[in-house]
Image (cartoon, rainbow, N blue to C red):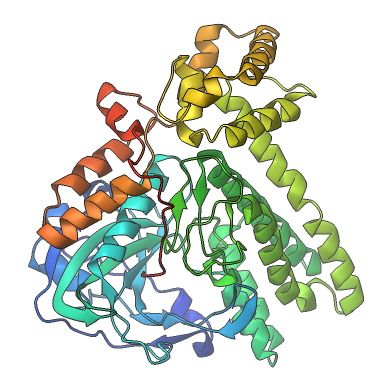
Length: 490
């Protein structure tokens, strides 16, 4: 490892795995890169030199025009079930330049997204447009602010070159930071080759060493424990999505990171009006990845992960399936435990009672019937006042009956009303990246080169639980009732 002037400190452990797992690639230089946005706070956390990264040295790296010392650019191979259909994939427009080691010893993948063609591009140009790259920057940083495990965004540069979709668009590259890019689909790729059990075991051991080093079991039990630990992290992650109304939109197996981080912000969005059937993605015509389906899809994806591990779990396939199915059966319990705990916090409850789940479900039913805004409903409960999108709910007699039950429930715990309100403030965000505000920021950036709207939005999203007066503006709902639609553009 050799630290560069900008502070890069690369150690490329993934490149020590079998060469079939990836392809070493050369950078695809661009004409005239310009830095659009830079995440100085993240750079500091990574132990990087902010000044150097905002200068020519950093921009050239972010654009893929130069490779820092000790970096080793590669594109990872993986497979995946996309809307239930299996296919072999890989980094078609992404390049991992290396694994950066922070001063406190943490390891992060540094990946360029939109950096050009790779051996896995399948006829695509490997490039990305400015709007989707800025969108991933906004949403991923908002998720971080909300306390949800996520990949992070370090920078976005424009390439000085147009890319052609339906029209000509300005090209851009996002620098993404992740605990790793090991996916369920990575295991599917290796297992799908079906010719080398040693390679599968090597990938499993690498994953354990990188993300689950506390696993101490030996032999087949070790890989069953890996399944359980991955399952626990996914259960907690998806519960956190549900609690803030986040809809990923494309929960393919290649978009499930084994680190437990949210990855790939394509057709994702946050729900306004509460409706469990909400779908934003233009291509999800059957609602496979609707809000209400996310826990079940998480379980389905984990079953696909378990299938890849069967040869490691037991030499007898029937016994391996039996053992894996037993572990997978706990997913619902893990998920609901996290969801119930989160809902208690959102309603100011410190202890557990048997009837809590019905209290929560009755509230959600009333929210759906009255077309209440999800985020603003919990703000209305927190501060006992009306917010946009809660008017019909708060005026209903059914809500008054529910509120009485809730108040009685609060009175049965030892904590004070002030304690309960603080718990609610800490768990009900004042601001989320509402779709119309994100689109407003992207339009200003891409059409007028005005990045001020985006910077103001990012500032508000950076501390969503502070409940400051200037965040009230972001509680306002869109003026139109037209359903919001997202597209796979990243």
